[in-house]
Image (cartoon, rainbow, N blue to C red):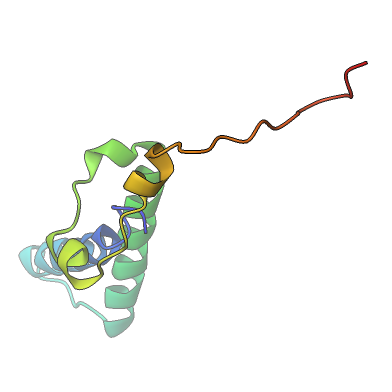
Length: 92
């Protein structure tokens, strides 16, 4: 799972909150459909930023503790018995 994926939810909530505050500051009516539009806009923006600049987003604090993936790095580094693999055309 990419580290920016949970941040899409946070970005959607932030856009909803900012839009709501802007409409209240301007004394305008805030419709229910605009909440959904702002959430989708914020999620899309964070997703685009996550694809373009993935190093900006830190690991989400809840995602690392809730889903524990197995550590395969030790298995990959222990070479042990290497097998020669021929890549390309046959040698003569």
